[in-house]
Image (tube, rainbow, N blue to C red; front, side, top):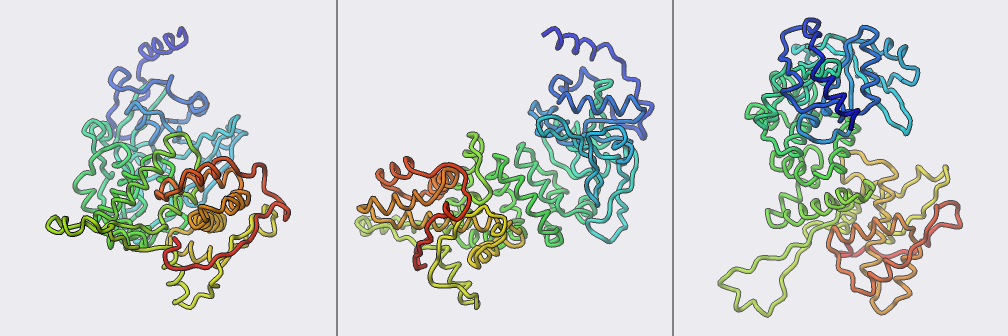
Length: 479
C-alpha cells in the first residue's frame, strides 16, 4: 500500500517537461485528467521505457494497451514505440531480437516467456503509392507514427516519465464518444492495408463502439480489397477472433456488413441461404464457443472450424392457419449443408475419394507429422482463402469421424461405445464433448456416462499407441 501511495504522490508532483520535445501540436492530457496509472502497467514494459529514455530516446506505451487502460480494462499486451532504431534497441537490450521484414520490430524477452514488443516511430505512408501492403520501414517521429496507425482510439501514447497521454489524432474525444474512426481518409487507409477493415469491425464489436459514418461507408465499398490480403494474414486475423470471447459479436458484424464472403465465402453462402431463422442456430453455436473460452477452457482451433463446418438442421415453421391439421405431424427438418454433401460434391468434382472414410491414425513421429489424408485436405479447402495448417486439417478429420461414430453407435451395444472412447485420448475426448455440446448433438444418459468416464491418458507416441482404423461408409445424413 505504501509503495502505491508513494507512486501516486510522485505522479502528482512530477511536472510535464517533455512537451517541447514532441513534434507537431499534440493534445497533452495531464495525470489528473485520465485514468492511466503506472501501477496497472507491466513492470518490465516500464523498465524498457525507462532504459530507452535514460539514453536520450523518446519512448512511449502505445496502441491497444493505452486504449484498454483508459477504458479500465486489463491490457493483453504492452507495446512500446520509440525514436531508437531497431539496431539501437538491439544494442541496448542483450535479451532482444530483431524480427520482421515489412515491419522491423524488436522483441525483448523476460522470464516466464514474457515478450515486450518495440517498434521504431514510422513515417506516414505515401498516399500516392499505388501498391497495397507496401514496404514500411521508413522511420519518422512521434507525430508521423501516430498518424500512420489504424484507428484514432489506437493512436494514443502514454509517457510514464511525466504521466501524460499524448493525443495527435483525436483519440480521447472518440473514446469519450464511443466511436471507432479510421485515422485520415478511410479510402486511402484501407487501400494501404485492407486488414484495417477487419480491425475496425473487431474493435467496434469488442468494446461496443459505433463505427463512424465515413469509416463505415468506406469499409463496405472497399471490402473487395480483402481479396488482396495474403492468406497467412487472414489466418492470423481469424485466430485473434476465435479466442477473444467476443467471436459472436465480431462475426455478426462482419456478416451484417457483407465481409464474411471475402473471409469464409462458403460459410457466408450457405448462411445466407439458410435465412434469418437458420443462421440463428449458427450464431447460437458461436455464443457457446465464446462461453467456453470465457469459462477458462483451452480449446484448439479445430473445435471452432468443426463448428463452422457441420451442417445445420432447421425446423420448418408451421403457418398459424395450418397449426390444427399439423399438430400430430413431426416438424419437417432439412439439411441445408452437411459434411456428407461436402464430400459428395468433392467426389463429383473428380476428387479421388474412397467410399470408405477411415479414422486416421495419430502419431507424433516426425516422419508422419506432415502427412494428411486427401479427405483432410479437401475439408481444409472449404475454408479457403483462410489456409488452415496441416495439423488442424488432420485434427478436424478425426473429430468429425469420432463424432459420427458416437452418434451412430448402437445404444444397446455398450462395447461399441467403449471401443470408441478407448481409441482416443483425454484432450481429444474433451474437444469431442465440447463439439457435441456446441452443435447440440443428442446423447442419451448412458452414452454421456461412458464418454465422461473413459479415455486414455498420457502422451501419444509410437505405433503401439495408434487408435484402431475402423472404417465406415459415408452416407447422406451422416453428418
